[in-house]
Length: 102
Image (cartoon, rainbow, N blue to C red; front, side, top):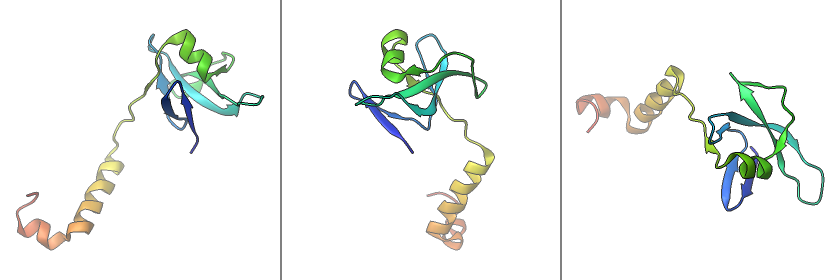
């Protein structure tokens, strides 16, 4: 998992980000050349890269404003894994004998 810090803000490059205009941007997996490499971002539509030229994250931040992480929807599989983990930690008998969550 790649991370990048710009202007004091940490960015998890495994996530997509949305600019002030509502355009979604994602890391291409590539970096700029030079002494201080910067992640190359590209606008996306429905999870696919547009044909735009990739833009270094600092330029994107400067030209398009603050970048906010796009929320990831919670799937049924994620909920199931969380519940199975909870029951495994507390023990199924103690959970159900108490009548559910305390």
